[in-house]
Length: 338
Image (cartoon, rainbow, N blue to C red; front, side, top):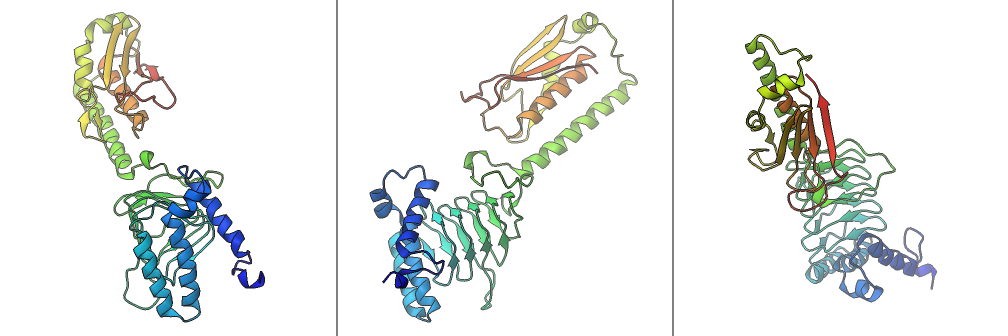
């Protein structure tokens, strides 16, 4: 009897079911007890029904396999073609609207969220759906199209459309999806923080604005003909520069995320001028702001360009505008003389 209940992986059928249940507890913090998992997790039900459908498909009972798949879709809202090959410890969180095509291949320890589509891009009866490597995380609403390979431990951001290969341990986001951060080490987990995804286009825009700021400052220096020497006394220059001048200069520092200056956003909390230099206290809109260091550097550079040689220090307050704590707490840049 036991031999007949062996799966292709060599595991006893009941051991495989236990592994599936344990996977739910490992990957979903909302899972509270085994009864809830067994009766209230459509991703788990869809996986079990798929195994039956896939068995039928492999043994040329194609209609029976498709029928089971169709019933599974009606019961769970998850459509998995019976021809799909799925590895161990696969988990679909919530799952409504998930569609997985016939020639898709999914490795071990893969986690996907609701609305994910593994779709095809060809009408030929050949490999036309994605191959998903081990430990991959695919965010809600993401679409992966064509016979492409998603490397092991890759992360696909929510709402992304992936049409090209994704190297191992990379994070991709956007439409179409682009690589958003350097390759992670093997030691880093593949968990997906949906609220803190990097934005590659925002990073590029920030770099462009950074270059533009440097060019503008250089043009001003050339127009003036000469820059005040850095040995100028802070007391003398301090009387020349005013808070208004610094604020006007900071109007040119644009937050790429919203396209508005840091002054108009209210991120400059206070500017203090004294004999020791200029101190600028700023905050950010939320603790998840992806360009904190960039904004601090831009504020420091722009203020220094009009300070005429006095030291400038920029301090980021420990609390964001929305009341959340800023990672790393309060930190400063400067002082630095020009």
